[in-house]
Amino acid sequence: MTRYSVFAIAREAMRQHSGWTRAWASPEPKPHYDVIIVGAGGHGLATAYYLGKNFGITNVAIIEKGWLGGGNTGRNTTIIRSNYLQDPSAAIYEKARSLYEGLSQDLNYNVMFSPRGVMMLAQTEHEIRGYKRTEMANKLQGVETRWIGPAEVKRLVPIMNIDGPRYPVLGALWQSRGGTARHDAVAWGYARACSDMGMHVIQNCEVTGIESVGGKVSAVQTTKGTIGCGKLGLVVAGHSGHLANMAGFRLPIESVALQAMVSEPIKPCMDVVVMANTVHGYMSQSDKGEMVIGGGADHFNNYTQRGSWQHIEETVRALIETFPMLSRLKMLRQWGGIVDMTGDRSPIISKTPLGNTFINCGWGTGGFKAIPGSGWAMAEMIAKGEPGPLAAEFSMYRFREGKFIDESVAAGVAH
Image (cartoon, rainbow, N blue to C red):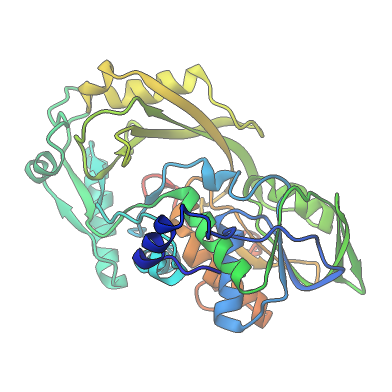
C-alpha cells in the first residue's frame, strides 16, 4: 500500500497521478476466517483494525450488505465529545475522543479531525443544575470539561441570540477538545488500514443466516455463499435485532430513524459545535460552509433512511430563535439513518447466548463519536473471549439485572 505523504503527492503530480493504487482491495470471500465482522461501518471496521493492531489477528473478513460506510457512518452529523455523566460512558467516549486526536497519523489517512470544541447550551434552570453536576463528575473521571456563562457563550458564538424570550441561554457545558471529523474519511481510513493488514473487506454481501454447531457459531450464510468462521462479531447498528434473530436470541433495542440536514454553503460564521437540548437541535459548520443541523429521533419504530418535512419544521423551528440567521438559509439536502435505542440510551458491547458470537449495538444517536473506543473494546472482547474494562458494564444482560447506565436523562440527550 502506498504511504500517503507530501512526497508521494509531489511524486504523483510529476507523473500525472498514474501511480496511485486502490485504497483497499475487493477480494472474493475465502471458505473460512478466524473472525467475521458483520457490518463495514465505522464500528465494524474499527473492531477489525484493532483486532489486527492490538492482537495480531488478521485472518478477518468484514462483510457488508451494501457499500462500505453507507449506513449510519455516512449519515450522521459527526459530533465528537466525551463529557457524559456515568463513569462507564465517560470512559469509553473519552477513549474514543483521545484516539481520534491521533487517528490520522495512526491510519496514515486524513480523517479531518477538528477539535473545535462542543458547547451544550443550558436554557433552563434544570439544565444548569444537570450540567454543573456533569462538570463535577467529569473532573472525577479525568474528562476535561467546564461550565461557562452566557457572556463566554456569546464570545465563542457571536451569531447566537442568547436573550431569546422563550429559551434564553443561561450558560453552557463546554468541552474545548471535542469537535468533529469527516465521517466518510473515518470509514475509508480504517478500511484502507485493514486491507493493508491482509483483511478482506467484502461489500455487497448480505448475511442471510447464521449456522452453529454445539452451541457455537460455525458459519454465516450470505448472498456470496456460506463462509465459515471461528468467531463472529455483529456490528450492524439499526439492523442488530434482525441479525440477533438469525443467531437465535432477542435484543432489548428499538430501531428508529434519526434525521439531519445541511444548508447551502455560506461564509464561515461558527467555528464550534452547538447543542441545544431543551429545543433538541444541534448545529455546526462544515469545512465547505454548510450548516450541519440535526435534531431528535423519530417517535415511532421504522427502518427508513429518508427525511420528512415534519422533521425539518420541528428542528429548524427549535433552532431559529437561538440562531435567527437560519431563517434566511436554503436547505441543500436532507437524510436519515437507522439508530438502535436501548432503554437506558447506552450501548451494548457483549457476549451473546450463541457461543463465540459477540455484539456491538445500541449506540442510539451518539455512535459516531464512539467509533475508535468502541472498536478498541469490541476487539479486546473478541480476541480474549471476555469483555475488558471498557466493555464490562455494557453487557446485554444488564437490563434483566437492573444495572442500567442511564444516559437518557443524565446527559440531557443521548448525542
